[in-house]
Length: 506
Image 1 (spheres, helix red, strand yellow):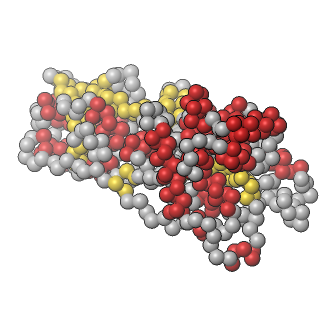
Image 2 (tube, helix red, strand yellow; image 1 turned 90 degrees about the vertical axis):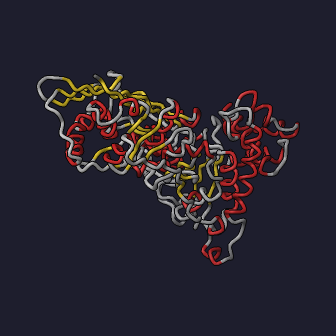
Image 3 (cartoon, helix red, strand yellow; image 1 turned 60 degrees about the horizontal axis):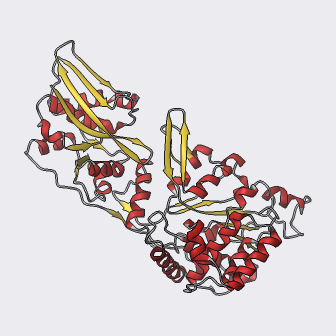
């Protein structure tokens, strides 16, 4: 007779249900796992055998076959250990079969029977809730999985606790959702001396999720400004926190027993490979652009990134997701991030200072920034020159608003956008609006429309640039608390678009 239980296999952020079938039949003693298991799954039988031995459970001298159905779906990871052990114990009539058929389980077994944390508990809980089943997982993963309130999560510390629970000896207390406390912000905008225009651009970018690039000499404060972006962004909503945490769960980044309401801030080095940025590698894992979903992706020294890596950013910026296509995997990950980039004006970095610039100035500036293609540069809504700060200015008292004040204005503008897009679940901020909806919410007044038309004709703006200016204008109006987009809002948006010198094709 066959005993059944359930677990999941991961395809991107989707957890596909897998039926674990176990049959104990007469024949030569053996223990085999079939159904396209990888090496880690095939080795599960040895870990299960050792864990059962610590509980004084000896396997019978029979033929034991475990099938992972559907058989044509590749199975990867060590989280299959626990469901294989549960199915085997049910086949041996140690656990009630009808009980184990109502649960989804995942977890790695150590040789002494302890349950080791695994990645993917949150997506597994989502799949269990959809199938109307309970979830059994390692105790360390319980607080993470319990955020899915539609299913009961049982976090066990060892296999013997699972056995005692199903046999009615000692019930496992359901896990409670845990939240990682938001650390206090030690980086404040008031720490940045001067750079008021860049601070204003940072606020606009945060309010409408507009992509931003800063160009300036070394030490002018570009990285310092970018590092303060998380302090002015609103915390993740419950839905956003679940979306983001599902990706981080698959990447094994939820190690504190819960999920965080803080928006991710990813800053990969310019030597990162394409697979690291976009996703891929073994199992087509999520890359930095997906780990930055609903948060910030900061690319320092942007021209130093390989050209092929930069060009792969173009599609995710437009669509909000990325498809990692490999010979054995075709995975879609969400990647709706705020891109903040920083660059020096030239290779040496001192193009604007004749006393320090290299002998190749000014041509070196065009060559250096020319590494950023026109189509990619066209996707930056805000382009900001960050001039050097005079040494004497560093002794001046802090100026401008602090991060909490700016964060309050950003939160107010985000709240306006949430009400505006209440009937459009796929839209959250002004950067998402397009087509007829964009025209309805961001068409400027007569004077603003005339200004935008003159700018488009004078500088040869692309259609993408035209619409991005409309979106930024709408955000500036939201920050000002005004319902209509007017000429001053358009003028400010245009000024950021042309800050770095606008080539005719952009």
